[in-house]
Length: 132
Length: 214
Image (tube, rainbow over all chains, first blue to last red; front, side, top):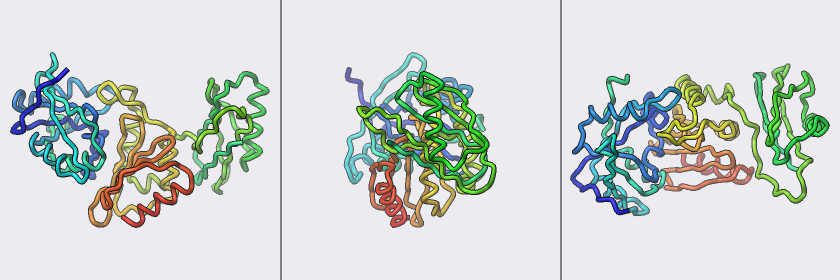
């Protein structure tokens, strides 16, 4: 099934859980963007405050990882990082609305650790003040 | 015969598992295997206590009585010849050594204790619980390499593996993931992303790469 691609102009956010983010040392695990099938969300469809509510509803469970922030990046920038990597990689963001989250999209590709870390270094981090 | 070794350097409670592909059916069979363990171990007192048995493992616990180092060799004379020998493995552990705690710091220890509590499905319905074998492999690595310029970060991956991340003196990322039977690594300084087995030669190579790019 072909899913429509998210345009380059859009910005997406990825939920960041404590397992993949060491807040004290300000470091991320490459797993945040390694994929495959990395879940992201389109800011054009839902604003950040509503997305945080969805993240907490879907991801915060007892004895599980907890959402503590989100990382924003422009789709075009994400694709350029892939294209300009030392081993160029085509990255797509595919629109994949869910009944409980119509902003949902997916990056289907499996990325290398190095590429994932490069993307992570370009994220704009939004902390969820309510989860602090 | 496969021999598995691990150096313990503290006197804390240690749990280990004798792993076997063979079902251990009788007390006599257990006794034989256990005695083979004792033959290769300096530790005979206090006597290890069997904790339980499954179709794949026998667990035992012992309390080292002095603060001297113990070299525990777990011998497996009972492999059938037709069975494929395993790669070297390490005893499962669920505690960090003092050395590792010193390196990871309070924050790392807290993260480790949190990860231990994660249940299956912790990562959006996927995510395996922390692998105690992965903990053992990380301990094995830190026993050989501890030249971190800054406090490394500890992560848990959806495979249930521990991962360490830090930067070298030039701010370039180094990331290692400790699988039960290998270590995957990424060294930004030379843009290498590969894996090594846990044999001595491969580990020596990894350590030398890390030292060169640290």
